[in-house]
Image (cartoon, rainbow, N blue to C red; front, side):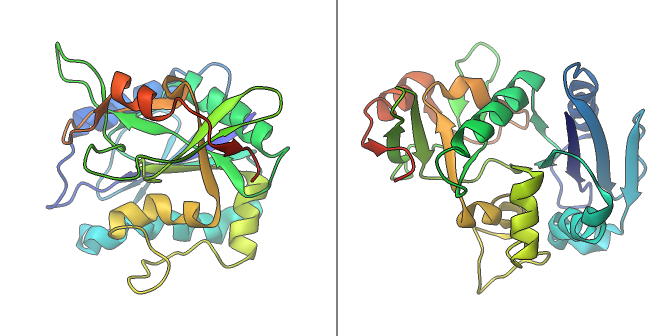
Length: 250
């Protein structure tokens, strides 16, 4: 299977990320063995990476830079043939196992509804401390929008916060968004948006889907290496997703 990865590598004045972090992200993708990966790095300066297409844009774009990968994807989609497409910010370590689990869940969910899709959940972990799942902030409610159970016993949950710094879709899902004019290439401050520009670039696409995660969310966990936020611990989040409240597809 082939996966196209679009990385927002803005390194302008208001960026808090480092070249070392970007190198670690690229090394992770280069370690994949079961998925054929193509990477397009959208940058404000040259960034070396074997097998990486590095497209350079002016740093003056500032926060609007976040939508540049979307513009490129729409313009080139008809010439692409990848089965899966992923956009990500440049400080997320996404292991191949998480992507494979996301792909398998995506295929499983498609049996029930074309509005269901899979995704990831971010965690941070400081040295000597346990993981905290930053997308599930303690002050944010509901942490869990609802929990679901399929007829064959599999359990899932819908996160109250759809943002995880990235999006992941099959080709058919992405084509449906683009053909339906639902894949915005500019920030819609007073239209369909999720949070600010950076959050919307990664997450407003999930407004037209229902983002579903497995009960064992560690299967799709990804590391936010900037370590900037505070979230729920594994035990706290597990407690919240424990009890199914509806059937999948409802």
